[in-house]
Image 1: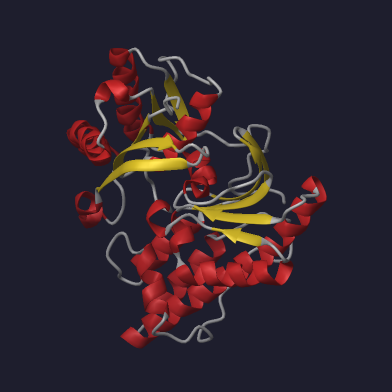
Image 2: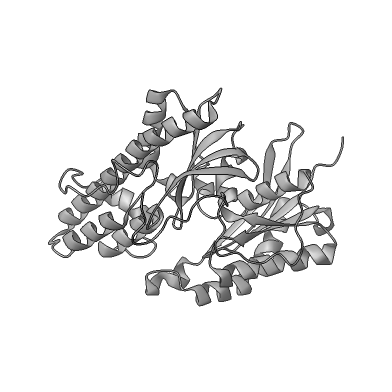
Length: 357
């Protein structure tokens, strides 16, 4: 029985310091041996958002023992590691540089291959950690920094079908939570408050819902929330606004996903219709339920990562590193941190005022 590759993954793109050891079984299915995540919520809470310099300092203080803990919990020894995979982008450059530099130094000290990983590719392939996933599939990637529909055709092979032209969905959740007086990070709390409110109380805008193909927009919705939040008089109205926001997001994603289904089928003519939802916002259970219902209507197989692997983590980074290791797709130790790094390098940049859709 040949030795299966053992990959150390390191993630530091924003405000989580994470490390993970991943290998695979005889069937080629990834096996997570350890997955350590250290959150910085307490560091940034008083500022109401992530402060890059503080995040980078926290990464530097923690990364050594986070990696050591991941190795210890895996039951493996350092010299058994076959390759090191670090997130190289996209993200906050001061944060990326910490994990990237640590990974390069670790690889150099062990004389092992190094792999620079696109954080978005980690999310895109994360369901492979708990599902047998066949290509091609349609991906909805929704997180704090990105909201995209992508056709996934294989490792490193992506075609973007649609993207946000302004704000990411996770950002819209966090900003709405802040306007409702919810402590950072408030996005996940919106779903909890929504269960106590009337989703039909406020008629909120659904930007570009009937145009723009698979593209998304959330800036106008945030502006509407800002105006209404100034006139909230009691807790129940806060719950009602949270419920109305949650319902509006569900409706936007429902409608846009139907458009994405049609585009995906036209471009790929898939034998099997698979829809994957990944990224931090994929942990929202009400969004999950609405999209699963849509998949049942349209005969799609719906796949989501486990809740604990929706947010930033190093297991998904190690898993992509494992895929790259198996085809000897290694990177040089001079690979730069890339704060902007698209999965589809050929896709047009669609963001900002005046964008034509």
